[in-house]
Structures are given as C-alpha cells and as structure tokens.
Image (cartoon, rainbow, N blue to C red; front, top):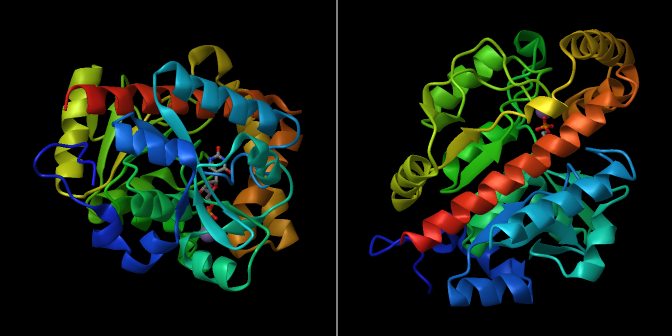
Length: 321
Ligand code: PSU
Ligand code: MN
C-alpha cells in the first residue's frame, strides 16, 4: 500500500473498519491518485444536497470546491452512498445525483443505507470520515461541523461529527462550528475527545458564516509548514484534528443580519417541534430564508475556502514527505 506519511505509515482502512474498507468503492481517479502518490482531498455530500444548500447554489459550491482542490494539484474525493454502495470519489456524471433531494446518512446510518440499498445517501461529516478513513484519505473539507446543540440539557442533541473527528485519523477543515450550536460546549467536548483544534490564521474560533465567535481557539497556526507538521504528527498516530478556517472577510454575513436570522430560525425550530437529524437541515434552511438568501453566499464561499486550504495541505503533506 502507498505510504504517504513515511515509515510510520498506518492503514486506517484496517485499523478502523475492516468490513467497511472492503465495501468502499474508490473512483478510478482516486485509486490512480493514491497509487501515484497524488494528494487526495475528501469532501462530504450533505452540504451539496438540498439538506445543506438550495439549488442552484449547491451546484456552484460543489464546482468551486472541486476547482479549488484541483488548482492545488490534488484530486477531489466526494463521499456518498449511491445505489447502496459506499463511494469514495464520484465520476463526473454522478455529481448530479447528490445535488438534489437525498437521505441524510450519518456514520451510524451507513450499514442501513447499504442494507436497504438507498439510491442516494448524502453523507454527513461523520459518515464521510468513516468512508474516507476506509479509503485511506487523510484530508477532509466540509462547511461548518456539527456540534453540541443549544438546549442540550433537555434534547441531548450532540452531532456525531464530534466523536467521528476524534476517532478517525483525518484532518478536518471547517469554518469552525455552526453558529446556531453551543460553541463553548462543543469546544469542551472536542477537548474531552482529545481532538487537536487549531485556528488557521485566527485566534478566535470562527462560527460558520462569521469570522469570530468570541471563543479563543486552543492554538493559532499561521504558516502552512507548521500546519503540515502538526497534521503529520496527528496522522502518524492515526488521530484526528480540526482546522478552523474563517469565512473570507468579503463573504462574512453581516452580524445583524445573521443574529436576526438565527433568532428567527431558533424560534421556528422550537415551534415546529423538529428533532433529531432533521434539526440541522431545518435550521440552515430557516437561516437562508430569514436572511433573504444572504447566508447562502457566505456558505458557498466558506466551503470553497475550506476545500482550497485542504488542497494546499494535502499537496504539502505529500510533497514534504
Ligand atoms: N456544513 C455546511 N452545511 C451542512 C453541513 C455542514 O456548511 O449542511 C452538514 C454536515 O454534513 C454535517 C451536518 O455533518 O451538517 C451536521 O448534521 P447534525 O447536526 O445532524 O449532525
Ligand atoms: Mn443531532
């Protein structure tokens, strides 16, 4: 097997998921890239489906992410469930399948998606990490990760993203944690789970469509060389980490627009009685509506910005091997 991280290489497919790894189907492009030592970046699929972004901005977001990864010399590896198969990397003709309505697939749902033969399962961060680990991909980009929900005391709602980031030896790049969550508790849980968290060129934890949250990140990193060294250390021990990358300044959502839209979205979520896996898509959708669509532009920009940094990191990891 190709050993991208030097003599201490490990095989996450074997370490983490002996069964899953034999089931994950890599695209020809991803398999060729791994054979030839070309860097690969995994992308989730929930954010590009209508669970994450409306049409047609979802297609633009996916296109921008793929372009950003290719520009850095890496190969994109979109994860998804298609016709009951776990996929790491899609063919060009398959992208449209994840761009519409899809069933949300978190890590725990993958076995069911396979068993029931789901036509299109949009993989969340946790499911995407499981598939990426099985496929031997070590760098992953998303929009904003899930976390501990506000009101967790009564709902108990904590995204499976957090524990998956802790369990898989993959570097996750996100625009921090989604702003409608409890950021303080999410950071505490990441600490408990032993997840290394760094802010990319920021000392303040980004909160999705905003560059700041008021919560300090445990560590700030400003250079790609240092980031690469930290990631390599984590990967050598098959441990995950979170790289929090703020939305580009020019696309950050106006604070007042955000705060008003969020307040409205949270009221609507409470009133609708929505629970479980439906909460995040519901709140995201209400923020889109309540901000008059302004949050969509920020969301597209931040996910593409994360894909760009992921591409640069993956390229640097394989070049300074
Ligand atoms: N980032 C975005 N939009 C999204 C998501 C992330 O910009 O829709 C998705 C990811 O797939 C993440 C999921 O894993 O939201 C979190 O869902 P939950 O809170 O139910 O775990
Ligand atoms: Mn949840």
